[in-house]
Length: 233
Image 1 (tube, one colour):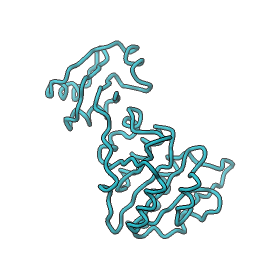
Image 2 (spheres, rainbow, N blue to C red):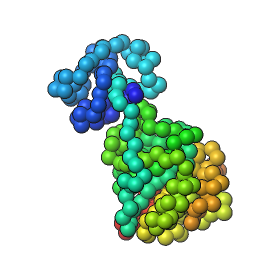
Image 3 (cartoon, helix red, strand yellow):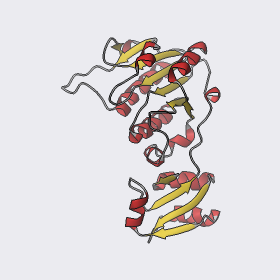
C-alpha cells in the first residue's frame, strides 16, 4: 500500500512500522524525515515531482512510502466498558470523509470505529493522510455484516443511535449515558433499511438554512462531540 504526506511518513518512520520503500522528490529537505530514514536505513528512491504525482492521487508533499497494508483490529478487541463509545460507518464511500471522521473520533476519545468489509471505503493512503496520523491511535474494525454486528453490540448492552432527518428526534434530546454505538450513514443514501430498523434512537441535526443536509464528516463531528459532552459533563 502506498501512503503519502509528511505527517503519515513521520508516524511510520518514528514507530518503525513496516516500510518497504521510500520515494522522495528530488531536492526533498525535511530534516526530521531524512534523519529518520538514515537512522532506520530504509531504501530510498528519488523521483521527479511529476513521477510521484503519477503514483498517488493526492498531495504527497514530496514523500511516498510503500508499506504493508493497514491492519484492522478484531471486533472482540473493541472496548466493552460501562461507558464505551463506538462509531459505526454504514458504507461510506469517500476516503476523505473516513479520514476526517477518524481524526475527529480520536481527538474526542472515541473507543473504536466499525466499518463493513464490502461496498464501502476501506483504509487506504488517502484515509491515512486525511486522518493526520490519528488512525494509528484508534482501533478500526472491519465486519462482514453490520446488522449482525449491531445485534452483537446490543447483547453487550450498547444503545444504538442512528442519524437521519426523517422520523427522528433532535440530537440534543437523547440520553447518551451508558454504552453508545453511533451510526453515520452513507453520504448519499443514509443508513440502510436493516441498520435503521436496528436503532434504538434516530437523531437529527436541525437545519436552519436552505441546505437540508451536512457532509458526513461534519455531521459525525457534531454527533460525536454531543455524545462526549454528555459523557464528560
